[in-house]
Image 1 (cartoon, one colour):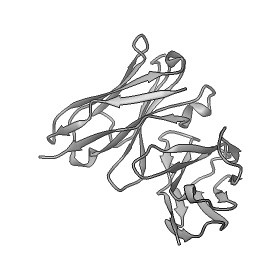
Image 2 (cartoon, one colour):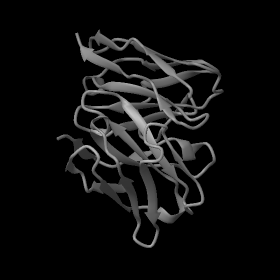
Image 3 (cartoon, chains in turn cyan, red):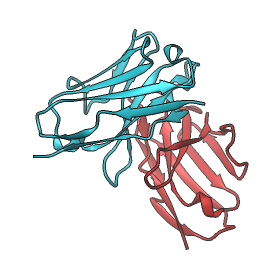
Image 4 (cartoon, chains in turn blue, yellow):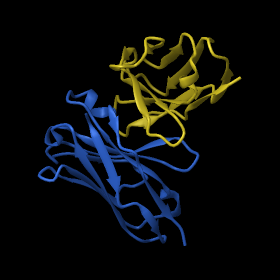
Length: 122
Length: 107
């Protein structure tokens, strides 16, 4: 079955950088679009970014545009999120999530990783 | 961005109760809505997509309805394992957005 495992979370100072990874297995990674969704402590869900299966298209939430970059290595079945210029308000659990195959199902999340906590604090 | 307003934000209910959660979109989204269940410390789980289609493996006591701007998630007979927080999400357009969540607690 689908298995998504995030890594790379941790504590970073404001203005710092961090790279999250999400290792995928149990499905043909190179044929699915992938998303990052985050959840601040005690808060709701916020979609962060999307990358198409062939890297042709990416989308970002306005709150991270210009600071975060989503990428993928289909040969390694791995999704990445490079986070720069981090702010206190970026503190959250970051989940990678798999989209579906159709144009519509591409835009929702049928499988999720367990999440990685990123804490931005001085 | 399309805003989703869920109500109520929390509710208390007993095992066996019928529970209804609503989600209102700030503009029409046809049937482009999903529902997720999240338990404490766990990742969300997809329950319903395309407003009313049950994801494989989800119990039939869950159902969804609606189109356009108004949607509902109904649990016909609440079970102990259903106490959780529920989120709606629209996939009509980017940025993808979620409702604020509804926490279902034990009465």
